[in-house]
Every structure is written in C-alpha cells, then in structure tokens.
Amino acid sequence: MFLSAHCFSASRCGAINSFHPKSAYHICSGIPANRYSFVGPFTDIVNAHLELKNPSDKHVCFKVKTTAPKQYCVRPNSGIIPPNNSKTITVMLQPMDGVPSDVARHKFMVQTCFCPSADVDLDNIWKTVSPNELMYSKLMVVFQQRQTDLAGTGKEEVPSYVDYNR
Image (cartoon, rainbow, N blue to C red):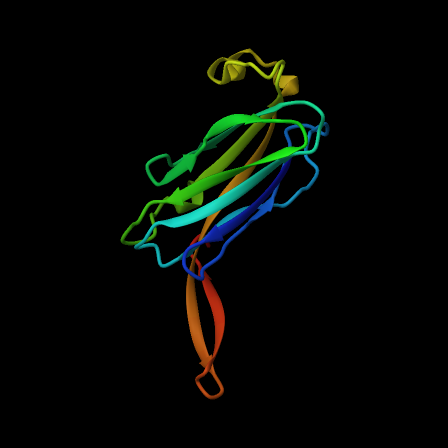
C-alpha cells in the first residue's frame, strides 16, 4: 500500500512524510514520513488529499481514523481498493479561530489489510481480521502558519513557517 498526500488551501500546501507498518511484512510500495502538515491560516477549511495505491494482485481494505474527529472530516473513511488501483481520500480540517492546545495529540491512522473477498462487510472485517494480517500507518498532525518575508525589492516573497507543535 503506497500512501502519499497533497494538501490544498488556496496556495498553501502540506504533506504526509511517513508510512510505518505494524510489522516488517506490509503491502506498501512507498514509505513517506510520519507527519501530516496543515498550513494556515486556519479560519477556512483546509482540504488535504491522500492517494492510497494498491500495487498488489489482491483487493485491499482500508480505514482512516483520527484522534480528533470533531476537527477533521475524512471521506471516504473506509473502502476497498481493487488490485493495481488507487483511491483518493479527502481530509478536511474544519475552520477554527486559533490552533488547539492539544494539537500535539492529533493523529491519523490508516489501517489496511487484504480482503478475504471482493464482497466483504467493511464494518465487520476489522473485528474479524487477524492482528497478524493488519497493517497500519500512524501520522502525526502538524499545524504550521505561513509567514512571508519580503526580500530585496519587495516583489519577491520568501516563505517561512511557524511550527505550532513545538
């Protein structure tokens, strides 16, 4: 399972940098880092997109969870990816006045496993699948505020960021 991300909020962009499987055996074809960045301002909805790729010859089930469900909307949050196919997941950060004090505890987890069949009950599979067959990726959320410093003539912008998680 390959996991990549692109975050879009006007011209602001963040990304997932990591993928960590539960065990050495996993179905991923790429390993990005473990941070998922949202770049402010946060007064509007910030949309992020995850592309889950299944390079295998089997169907793969996935489920995306968050520790802060009131702050984020994930669609679709579960599904099946056919063999040699991909699925785009949209993550929406809800508008807020400031950065939450508990932002360091915001995380996403992407669970994946091979489907026993293409016709599977997605709610039930997570209860019945063996823990040895379950793979997951934990992603820490990072909030960053864009700062623009004018350099030289004032026409060139040099972006820098304030990381609220430190």
